[in-house]
Length: 126
Image (cartoon, rainbow, N blue to C red; front, side):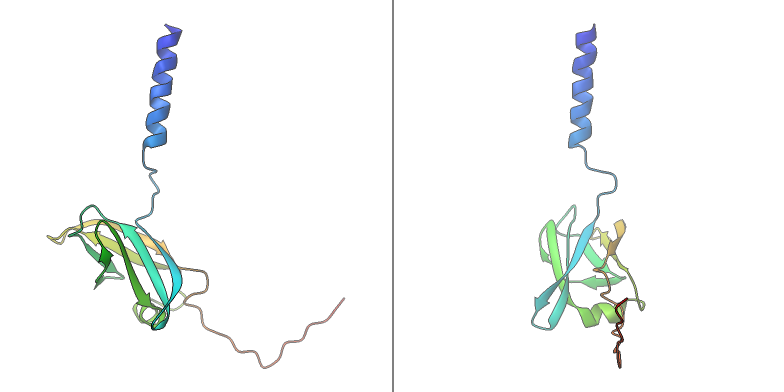
């Protein structure tokens, strides 16, 4: 009897390990260099290569099939986002138009912050 419970325990433990985590992200974002200077590379996975990708409610042309990616100039992301935004909304919709999933994708730290030019900086040793 104990052997049966041990086998069942191993089976359920294996099922937990192979299951996708509930907090898996739809996409990731990072800064890369491109023809426009600096671009935001957004990568993700969709259920079908026909699914439409939207970033901040704007349809974007992506490369790839189920695994997709898109490069957007940082200036474009600034235009599409609120000042000091820390995320972009990435949505995947099936070809009919109903949303499959929407996720807030974290931006690299300080990407949409403003540059502050200092006239002088004073550093004192204690």
